[in-house]
Length: 119
Image 1 (tube, rainbow, N blue to C red):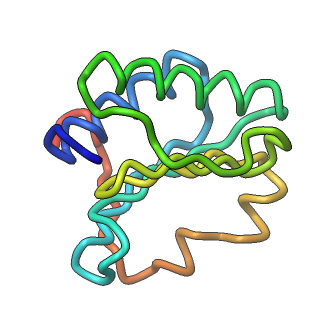
Image 2: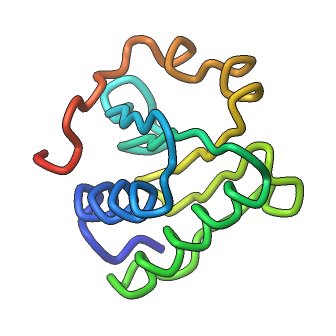
């Protein structure tokens, strides 16, 4: 599915999320602790409408980059949207869901990428 470098997907994802005012964007390099993906991009939204706007912006940007269509879950409810590009999985949470699932803690052994745009 993923036809471009995972780091390029992370860059494009973070930029699209920032452009849509996603909050608390975190990138985890989970490739050393899991076979699920190389990176998780995690961010928060203020509402289901905001979450869907972030997801749509990410999909649009990555389609322009040649990444194709992701596997997608949670779009209708907009509380936790997952965009799976294979090596890069993006999680767009509302704040309550993000606190509850706390992926950063769950994947605590993964390295946090502090400045994903300068990876």
